[in-house]
Image 1: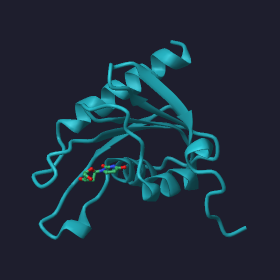
Image 2 (image 1 turned 135 degrees about the vertical axis):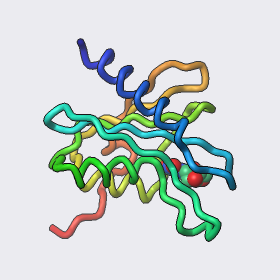
Image 3 (image 1 turned 90 degrees about the horizontal axis):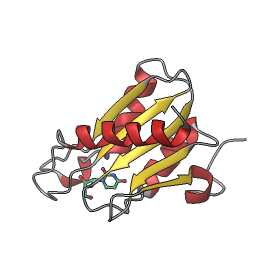
Image 4 (image 1 turned 180 degrees about the vertical axis):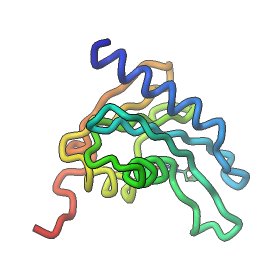
Length: 130
Ligand code: THU
């Protein structure tokens, strides 16, 4: 499989995971799939809470699951929402950047095409302690 085919597959995992979204307040279902350095994939969805501020985004849920399962470096993150043109929030960009200096971010456009953009483009000059 070439890179684009792999990323399409990754987006399919994100789409499937979005079905598990717990979003009774916003009704905004998001799924994310993380591709690790060793080619393992870990998924996550957004989990909302009656205390709104406790809501967890899909991307961070996926990244935290990947890291919890031994992933050290992230190659790509696919994000799915049915409306398309989804771009990760600032907090999720910073969390992705921690484990992925050069990761590709993949998402579906409004007309279901695939869009690939570097995390360094979405978050130039990410915070670090160096
Ligand atoms: N959400 C994500 O899952 N990822 C983001 O990058 C931004 C927003 C979720 C949080 C909330 O459940 C819903 O989308 C609406 O903000």
